[in-house]
Length: 585
View 1 (cartoon, one colour):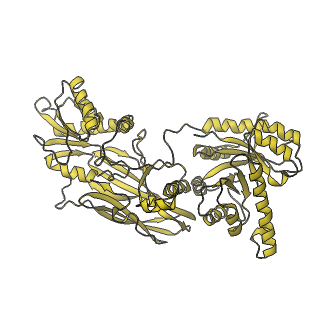
View 2 (cartoon, rainbow, N blue to C red):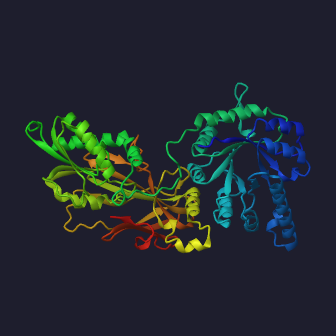
View 3 (cartoon, rainbow, N blue to C red):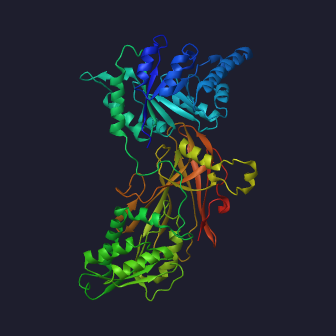
């Protein structure tokens, strides 16, 4: 994770002194510099830019949105002159800072979002008595087509916003948090923030804000470095090294279609919590299958489906030891690389156990006898997205009438979200560098599902249950296709970028695993969330109902999801016929 820079934002131009700026530059990573000063202090700018990064603050020309053509063109000319001047003297990527002051921004956004290597930082307060800062920001970035070169600079205020407002800000691409020096108070001769602002700042640091900006009026009247030390303390105290690549879109696994590599198996096996819970479920199942009186006479048959490199086998063997039950284990695995590892384990470690290995696809093999317990870990981030229903339904014919399936039930959940980062990353994947390559592109990345560990995200409403599957499946006609329409309510004005999916599962009786945000199994990290994007962002008003449709479709060779929005705005059905994102059987 990038360590936040400490930025000096000097407001008072009249207090500018060459010697003082050069002194403070040595200690601050970034300086905010009004472009108007460049002409008067070119020598200082050259020295400053050589030592630290500069945020060039552009002048707000109110007449740039004027209906008077003469005034508007004059303002455009001055603004373009400032940009060209910075690009001329800057030896690297330029960062332009522009303050949002008016909701009318069509013309200035057209000028500032022209194609370039520069980054545009839009400054606004977290809350304001006279207008909604988020509306100003959303109006601007919508005019600019959600350009990834536009970032948000958010200024803390004396008043702390409501929780829902804070959550919405956390879903935006924030580059920098401004802390006005007036928010500090001295405690034992050292500047500190109050507890409420510290908690708020902590949340932004944890979500990955790049820079912290100290905003002062006159740098000659305060001890800048004590404030800088205070901000550095907050960064070091609250920034954590991430365990995952947050906000990175990943392609869901297709273990039936492709053989997993050793690196993937290693990641799965690093999650001890999951296999501990599987072991608990197997222990409970063994106690129900074989009573204490019959523990020395009977032997339970356990079938491990998709055993990988053996973690479920170890869980079953440990469960047998803990419950003092005898077991016979049938291992079914189609991956030839995993079979090598399993055979080595059987010949070197599991030599005293009754274990038989079948190097076959679980859907097509014939075991010598039926099993008492079926154990599998075919669950994906959406529960059914790795074809667990199709696999377990095909194997349940090998289960005894009173047999037990682990897992026995699982449910997928979904909720609408706003995340500019996920939208921009997906759009970057969709770009075609050469027009000739357009004919080679057979699908849109916005029609595909992903796995993601989201950090910069706003949950518009709470998750709701979607599809449920039960095993063994005793339906007269087994049909794993599904359709459901869900309704969600937006609490605030927001932008709908897509849907995040989760699942929970009952392994057996009261043994439960979940990645649902409200019931997430503590310490379990095997699964990221499931993401279904929309091709175009949807503007949503607070209080509006979002009606979304979800399908799970199937054909003889593949399974796929389709999704669309019916209210308040209609979208097309994404991934129709599974053309963009099939899950092969």
